[in-house]
Image (cartoon, rainbow, N blue to C red; front, side):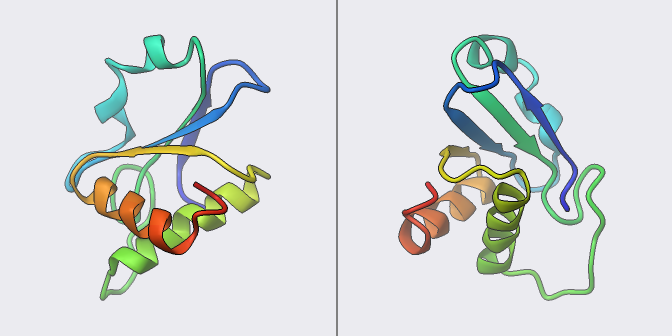
Length: 103
């Protein structure tokens, strides 16, 4: 499972935050206090970033997005809001197009 952190009130709507290429979940540290007042914020380190292990490539947007779906399933989250920056935004677009029931 990808390294991740959950913050905010249990039972609140879940908001997934996906970072940009070459960063990690700490990218969202400045926004976390405000967002965690209203949301259950799920931040994660994408494959090969931060504390998530890298695997043999090639990496694809679809593969990175499917890892997010696996993370959501593993945490028993059926549906979430999604905000991504840079490559995280591409992951969000793939999820919106291919897994709208989850996002």
